Image 1 (tube, rainbow, N blue to C red):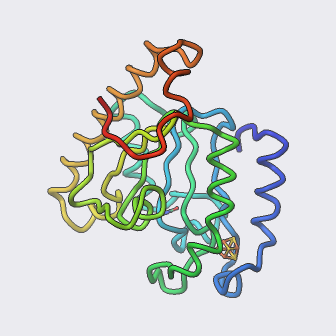
Image 2: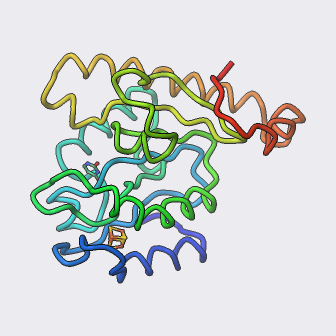
Amino acid sequence: MSSLSGELQLIHSEILECTKCELHKSRTNAVPGEGPYDAKIMFVGEGPGQNEDEQGRPFVGAAGKFLTELLESIGLKRSDVFITNIVKCRPPNNRAPRKSEIEACNPYLQSQIRLINPRILCALGTPAINTLIGDEYSASRFHGKPLTKGEITTLPMYHPAAALYDASLKETLLHDFKILKQLLDKEKTHSPSTPKIAERSGTKQTLEKWV
Ligand code: URA
Ligand code: SF4
């Protein structure tokens, strides 16, 4: 595990003992997430699967292996990014998390986002996209289309697991990771203290397209 700030560590220990929704009953381990506390990129998936539940770590199964490959395709390592999910406990038999469970867990995700304060938030799959930017967005219509709100740009993507069932989505994901790389390069050329970013900060209440 990489370094976590004290406050983030506190939230993660709360998650490990959380009983705020039904999902706590069937979990083996809660999966708070992992990565540097000051990561520039944060990935948000749907929820832990069997491997994640057993190990207490996010994206360690087949979808995780593909996520690692996608990161490597743009020169990033897993340890460069923060990875978490909209629900921190595994839904039984990998069913989709319920709205009530997503809502119960959302304060943890929002605290993680606030503390890590990433520049780019990658939403993996429609449930994560809906949770982060709204119910009117879907992976099929909005993948690869970044949206900026305040200082954070959200990039909707297909879930890597979807490519394990539909091989054509593999190319789509590889393409969308190139967009992620472009966003990252753009961020690097505008340091966070430049007036351009400062101007953007907190002034935009509504979602808008990147550029
Ligand atoms: N799928 C997810 O959405 N999250 C994980 O952590 C693993 C697989
Ligand atoms: Fe708590 Fe989230 Fe786990 Fe539900 S899924 S028990 S809200 S940590």
